[in-house]
Every structure is written in structure tokens, then in C-alpha cells.
View (cartoon, rainbow, N blue to C red):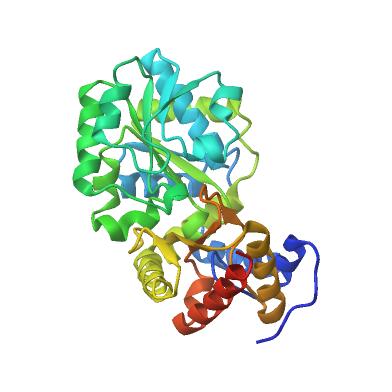
Length: 371
């Protein structure tokens, strides 16, 4: 293995690496656009005009069919899609309070856009370290709520998923309360192996669904909202208001269509690789895997160490081997332990389990020396 040149800036060092334990390969724009051009020539279809046209229709129809929903709408980002969904659902309900997990993407990755941009408020749905339960739902339904949201899988808890029985029980109770239920399904595609059910059967539990085209699908960017025709028609107006009606979207539309064709069939392979890595790492002294076995293509690794030492060990291994282990640590409330995420995507499939075990054991030993 070729070592990379010394670097002080972690992002500079990351870009210099040639292999990655998590995520996908670093994109070469000329190569990526060349592949996209070849796919466009094979697929056909004209460039869109403000997100309208052959390619948009093709993509929206494809996702609507996959999710079993009457209609779908492409948006340039997941955060925009999520905010539009919440705004419409709370408007329908006449209540601006949204039920969400305390570690939901809304809270930890979107800078509380629901509050700052739309004046919505949040009510807690579930405890900090566990998935929301039916009992949690009964508690929050004691006050008015405009929408209930579920993130599947819940990334901050290791991409954890409800059992099918738990999920259906929550959905049925929300429906009985006449409250809309929204799915943050940014990683819904990656959840299929766990449930072993069609996407449409999962999505049928929810009034509205958001899915992403980056993440496991590896697309350039973009998201989709799906629901009934009235919801999507209103979302189309909000897309304009939110500045998401760009003159040309065809690179993102093409990338999403290509991802659905080429990457969607790999979800089971990603999950199997994640389970194999988790089994291997679980044998290392002091290493904890959450959840074990993984529910999706990602999981958390927790081991003894201090944050500063863990980040330095990640950089040192990258310099020595040319392999990037993970982007950053995940919050760990227990002093003397550090956590990080392994997310299996395209680049991970090229690594042998034995090499991953050796590198993570080396990382473990470097971290343990700091305790």
C-alpha cells in the first residue's frame, strides 16, 4: 500500500487518500461527468426546463412506483424536501408542533431549520438513546401535534430500525389519532434487506415519504418527496418558494436515474458486507458494535480512547496506508470511550475483511494508549 504525503489539514489528507473504509470513492469530476454523459446517450430524453420534462417525469414516476405513492416530486436537497413536507403537513393539521426523535436529522444536521425558517416547534418522540416506542407515542398524543415523524433508519443510533411489528403498531396508532405520519427515508433504500419487504409496503405506512439519491445510492445530489397528488401539487409550489426550481436539473436527474438502475440492486450486498465487518470487529478486545448485527449498511463502533487521540490515529493511519477510516467521531457521552460510524458503500466492497480487521485493530491499540 502506498502511503500518502504528510498533511496537517484533515480534509486535505482525506482528499489525498485513494481508498476509503466508509462511503464511496472520491469523485473525479471529468470521469463522473463522462460516465453520466454515456448514460444520458443510452437513456435518451431532453434537458429539463425548471425541473419539468422527460427526465423529471421518468424519475418521479419511477420513484412513485417504487414507493407505491400516487405522485412524487424531485427537489435539489433533502433538507428542502423535509422542510416542505413539514410545512404542508402542519398546515393541513392546523398545528405547528412536530413530533421528532431528539437525535433526528431535523435536530442534529439541519440546524433546526423547521424552527428558524418555518416557525414550527418540536415535541420529543422517544428517548435520547433508543428508538421511539408505542408508549412514547401515547405520551406525546396527550397534547396537540401537527405531524409525527420517523427517521428510518435512525442514523445517530447506528442506523437502527424498528421491528416490523413495532413499526406497524406505531403507524396504526398515529393514523387512528388522525395525525399525518412522515418518513425521513434518506436511507430507506438501505433498509430493504432488514425488512425483506417491497419499498411500497414500507412506504404504505406513511402519508408522506422523503428519499435521497446520494447516501447509499451514490448519486450527485437530490431528493424526492412522495405522497398523494394534492400533497405533491402543493410541494411543487413550495419548491418554487424555497428556491428549488433551478433552470437546469438534468445532471441530478440523470444521476438519480442511473443510481436507481445500477446501485439500488446493491443494497443487500452492502448490508451483507456490513454484517461481515461487524462480526470481525466484534471479536476485538474492548470493541462494541451497535447495533449488532447491523440493521442497514452502517453501524457504530465504540472503543476505549480519547477523542483527540482517536482523530490523530485516524490521520496517522491515513498517511501510512492511504486509507481513510471515517470522517469524524460520533458523540459519546461516556468518558474514556470514542465512537465512529462505518458506512458500507462502493469503496468498502473492495476491501478484504481481514485488512479491515487489521487496520481497526491498529486503530484500537493507538486509541487505547491514550486512556
